[in-house]
Length: 118
Ligand code: HEC
Image 1 (cartoon, protein in one colour):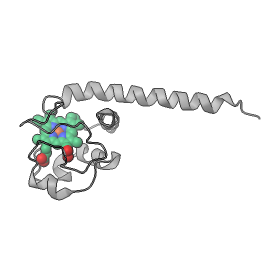
Image 2 (tube, rainbow, N blue to C red):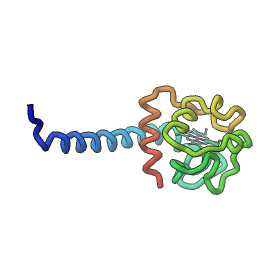
Image 3 (cartoon, protein in one colour):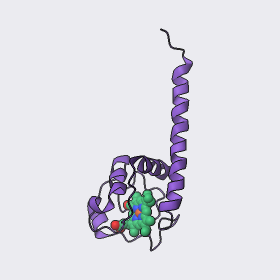
Image 4 (cartoon, rainbow, N blue to C red):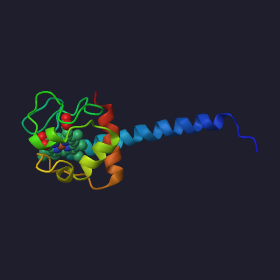
């Protein structure tokens, strides 16, 4: 059977739609579960998460991070953010963030949203 040349294009289009829906779900979750501590500017409550994706851990300007997260090192990737959000205290024992996101799908949506915060 010969596949129509439009099919792969449709698949790409559907994937683009899916990932923007994902980030929109993440935006809702972020507003409910993260924004109280993570504003556009770092505050006493938490660091700004603008530009966090791809930056080194504990790298947000204007925030005094815990020695635990600073010592952890590394870069925020999908994998490290997923591990941190699943269990922040297991990722960096003694760190200052206690909020976790239990459902893997919710973590993926929040991470998709974090990527859009430049
Ligand atoms: C009660 C306040 C609070 C809430 C709610 C909260 N956080 Fe945090 N978050 C913090 C604090 C404080 C730190 C700094 C941790 C440290 O220094 O150990 C942090 C650190 C982070 C970091 C690392 C930033 C960096 O530059 O290395 C990420 C990523 C993060 N939080 C994501 C989230 C997400 C996503 C949510 C919502 C699901 C969330 N946080 C909810 C307080 C909070």
